[in-house]
Length: 205
Image 1 (cartoon, helix red, strand yellow):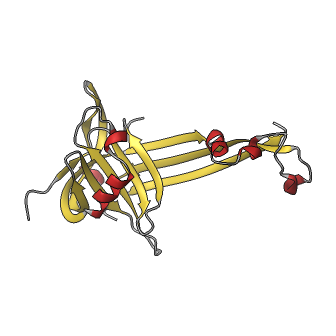
Image 2 (tube, one colour; image 1 turned 90 degrees about the horizontal axis):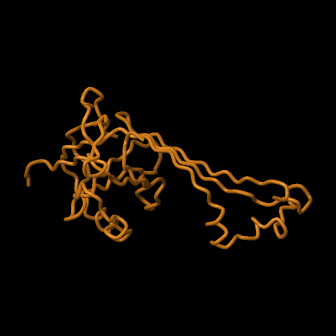
Image 3 (cartoon, helix red, strand yellow; image 1 turned 90 degrees about the vertical axis):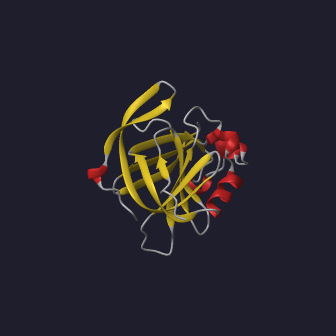
């Protein structure tokens, strides 16, 4: 909804880890956003324009500690929800790197453990409704997601493929400077459903 001006994008340092610094294209703006912070994290919400009744936004969770952080123990769903409930609309000096992320996951093992192992068993699977035989089983389920963030906004897409084969007040504006690893969530606000989620360790890769 609030685009970055490409003229303001500058080369800047991004600290991947202590002593490991790369150059990135850092977007910047000074605009009102939904913002909050705790003693461990800063949280910034950037809403997207939408033409339907659905309201979608990107939330960036930036650890205050630029060094290696134990995010898995320091951040969980209740803590994220609590921070979101504490968001307030305020002017923020924002620095966010351009980045592209693509991931690929095999879901076969996870889906089997969640209660559908028979579909992957070539001796027990029954997809006879497809071809009239019992010679088919699922060999693999692959999920791919793609997210790119630049001055104009975010392009994101996801696809899952199922492969079947034969039997086998007013203080100074807060500064949100994402110049070290951070998390992002693309979320549908009304329902709270998370559409995309990622961890940016190096915006260049």
